[in-house]
Length: 288
Image (tube, rainbow, N blue to C red; front, side):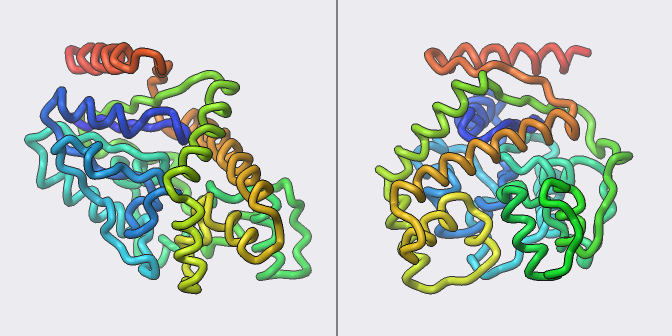
């Protein structure tokens, strides 16, 4: 059985994945595009060692920052782990839905095609700026997100007709009201700051590290502007919260259109009830 845990940022995916792995004696495979990279811990909300509770976790911290780890690489690595653990329950967890689709559906990718990027972390305005760098005379409108992404990628892969490669796959999405999610995201950023987000970003800034991974993660690029004296610290933190909220909204849209997601309302006062509801759904599906 494969359980793909998905949903927007900050909704409780990591906690649920550990509880499900304990329940079904399973393993966990990361499906967050940025958590494959070493050192980027706080900004990516990467699971801490003590939170793993002895569960075997795969595809976390496998790349150096300057490595280019594509969806093609992920597809190969994730499928290899799945094939080697067919006798176990596998929980895939993360906010990069395209990674889950690439691993679990019959996508035909090659190494050249995987330069594609869905740019989930960037706003339309940021995408437009990138397009202008490539083509200062572009006529594409700033709100034509699909066209902007197509221009930034060498190829546009159509996966709409893909089918699942594996039996007994279930997609569980955690959700909550928009107002509650946005409040959680805002508080989460504040907690990240308490845990050392600014210091983590400053470490990379001082090392003058330039790579695609750092340019993608929400939290670093905003603080880099603060370090450059372009904006104040308060403005940087507000921008992190704003971009995180926008990212969560795009994640909802993507999951609703791309995966057969069963949504479960997160119970933040008693998370065990959320776990119980998910287990009930999984067991009912197994009986069919």
